[in-house]
Length: 120
Image (tube, rainbow, N blue to C red; front, top):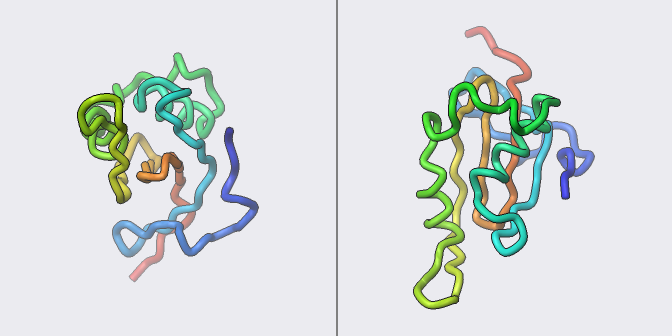
């Protein structure tokens, strides 16, 4: 399932990383580990959607050079032992090319693009 900012321009949830770059959410996807497989694939698919390309074209730079996806997956969605999934709490953000990617513990993967730079 993919949504675009729930129809809300400039949500209060939109990040401001460095104080001078504003970000606008351009796409998001709900990651469901039991349905979607690994988190890396889900992130690649949502980045591909943001770039309007096939997921097979998202390869430069490799995602593993930008972030430790296995670490995020283990922290937010990993197993507590046995068959019980852990449900971590939090959000992590990383840059991939010109995009800001936010992975939330509730499963939402959000992709943002820079919208403006304020001059001081």
